[in-house]
Image (tube, rainbow, N blue to C red; front, side, top):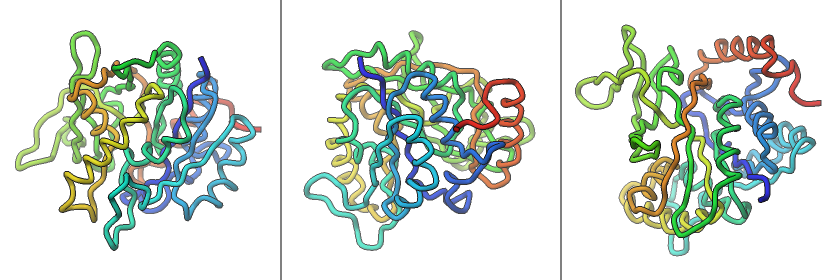
Length: 303
C-alpha cells in the first residue's frame, strides 16, 4: 500500500486569535505549529502533504512555509475557493469566509488517491496521534462501507485557561467506535470544573470525556461522498448561506448516522496544544521547550 497522505487545513481566518495564527512562530528555532505536525507525520510514515490554503496567501505560504517542508516530503497545494461548489450552487454576494473544513476536503478531491489523514494547521497533536492514525491507514481496506478513524483526547487535556473553546464531544460505543459527535461552541474551565456554557444554564462535563480535535483518518474512496454532502448542506442552509459553515465532524456524523461509515476511536493521553487566543502562546512555547529538553524533538526541526 502507498504511504498515506496528510491534508493540512490552513485556510481558516483565526478570528478569535486575531490574524493568521497558522504562521506565527512558536518553536525554539522559529518553527510554526504545522512544522511539528508534518515532522511527526513524516516519522509516522506519511508520504505526501497537501496544504489547503486561501488563494490570496498562496505565494507567501509557499515561500515562507512550503519551501522548507518540500525539502523533506512531497508537497501539493489546494486553494479553498468560495466558488468551488457542486454544480448548480454559487456563493451569495458578500460572503468572504471559507465554507468550513468539510469544504476544504471537498476541494482536495482531485489531490488524494488513497488513504489520508486530515488535521488543522493550528493545532499541536503530538507524535502518538500520528503514529496511531498511520498504523490504522496502513491496514484500512476500501469497501462498500467506509472504515475511518479519529484520535480522541481527554477533554481536560484540550482546554485553555484563557476563554471558552469549541470541541466535538464524542459518544463512543462499548467496542470503541464513534456513535455520534456533538459540536459544542462554549466549553471552558470555571472554579475547577469543566462547563458547557451553551444554553440558559451551564452544565458540567466530566473529566475523561473524549473529544475530537479534528484529526481524522479516511480511506481514499470516501472522497466520493463530499459532493453529495456538500450539496445537502447548501440546500439545508439555503436561508443562511452568508455565514453557515460545513464542519468536518458534521460530515463524519452524517456518514455514521446514514450507516455509510464506521469510525474507530483511537484514544490518546497526549496533551493537545493550540493558540485559540493570543494568551495561549507563552504556555505553548514553554511546552515545546520542555519537549525539546526531553529529547522528543530536536532544537531545530529542519535543515
